[in-house]
Length: 353
Image 1 (tube, rainbow, N blue to C red):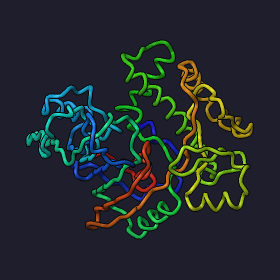
Image 2 (cartoon, helix red, strand yellow):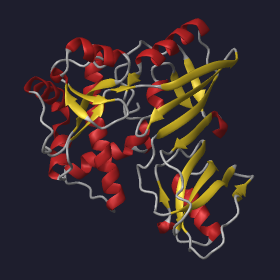
Image 3 (cartoon, rainbow, N blue to C red):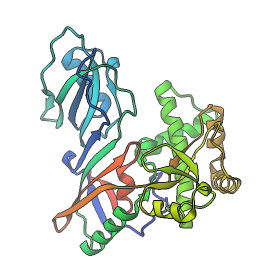
Image 4 (cartoon, helix red, strand yellow):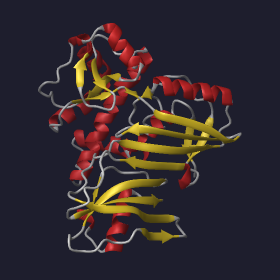
């Protein structure tokens, strides 16, 4: 059973079953940046398109193809292996050197693995993790035997009201392995092998806690509408404010327009300037009691507490039936949000073998 399987759904049971990623072209991701290349400096900002490659493998292939050190390559986010993904990287490039050519870097017809450079330009600095605004998705759901009228109505509801902002199963590793490892780590039975694994395990722990609280809010029916005791965040922004500092009617109108959202906990050490109303704190503490070992472990690891929006606004959602059992979806999500959170409110899906 998936670690996200039992989380509450906001809009009812799935409307049918479907296969996702039967072939890489069924799952397309296009990474969105908020800036353009500076056109000067000791790096190149490049856009790649990869097929059946993880981000790490794509970086290694690029480093080999261009004879550059892989550790000098910067990326904003990781993208799925079994997909066609466009994402941005930076590579160190001497100022006096001529620019490389765009085009194919790696192409293996047997495995279907491909890597191409689509665009490049000089840039001043290495791309840091997180330096993106979001992603545009194109998904194809095959063998989807469902009532088109019900599907259209559900998608319209999602477009208008959003979905619960759950962390997807990718956050927890293959078969939930990261969740098992972090529990063993906090129990003194395992030790992360390196800094990257440590970071992934801490993220998994916080994600489990957040999903648990969000599921309870969905069950309670108040995940989408901030209450007077909530801490609220602006859509697509990190700015928090207390719900009771704004007139209830105005706050409700902004929430209905998907401009603000109630938030849930990413546990850790108490952070200066981040205090919760007593009623909200008590409510979340009750829901997190089954995960007390994770909360204590995060505090012991000196992770700073933070907040995350409970609701995910699905941008520019569009859909069409390619045939009677194939639904094509397009939508945009902010960084750190998961396409699977959208899918689970529509369909019981599985990755095709």
